[in-house]
Length: 142
Image (cartoon, rainbow, N blue to C red):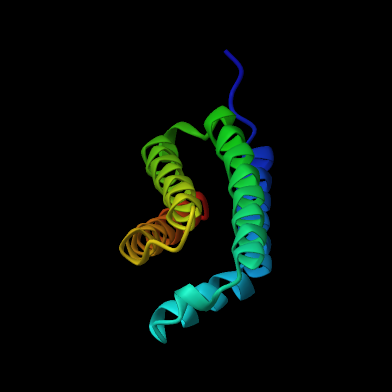
């Protein structure tokens, strides 16, 4: 059995994390638009066509996240970080699930409770991903 390629593994994880951040940055203005409407109790004022655009944007981003999750699950980490890799994978899975739930929370209209729950799930998963990456980095740099 061939030993996992550490350089490839690190490069792929880095690419996935950076791509995830880029996608999140492009979706953030639409997220903030919904968040503001919720905070100001004006979700009913969001035009139907604008909400449909946001749903399409979020779905597109979620689809890209799903592809990255597939990449994560095919990576072969070095044995010493296998446990951390599995936690990273589970956290990313939870993040994708939170994104899917957010898309659903906007159809056919904004479900504030579901949106808030999806946001909380994404936040928790993001924190877990960051911790996993930090631990991975520390262990690999030893």
